[in-house]
Length: 234
Image (cartoon, rainbow, N blue to C red; front, side, top):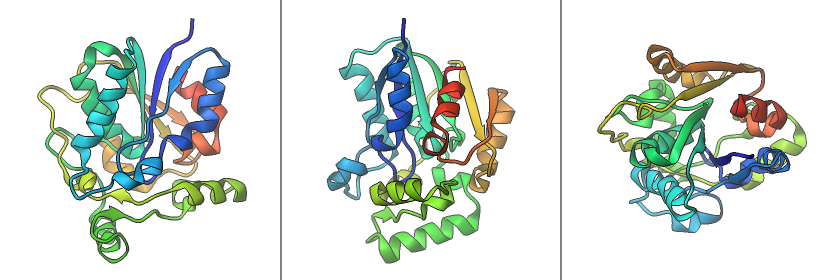
């Protein structure tokens, strides 16, 4: 019997980025949901100054509740790890386990920006001011996410949209432990390693969560769908 799986995208992406992975999972008999967070992808028109991490946690929780999902494998890629961790506390009884795919992880009360090197934060803030109307982080080149195939680069760059700035400035608000006491697996993409996640990887090691290496780039669901599926299902 297949699993119920919810796949949450990261920075500047949308539910679209999971298409190759979702297809493989559905062919294997799983029920798959790929929500797009508010202000991104086909929901880019909903971007306002108020769209932040809390909004995105509600996005994920709403999918679990509206679709009446239970015993869910909840997956967060990159920035998407934070909405997943927030939703885990709010809808713990609907979730079986978490997988963070090269996820950005911070301790409760800290911001996504706190996980990044200072020079990266300064550059992203500057880019948001100059090219994102002070509301959003402009999309980086696809190569920054380890995407190198020309067709994949064209697809990712065509689909990416600016990312709500507030979601990086707003702290992750939790009442309990990170991961809500659920089983958590961290999938570390190694070829190449995404340098901005160094502090996230340290948080994960300190928490002693299960760790898996995946020899592909940061956008693993694009660069290695088959390997990503294997890593998610374990």
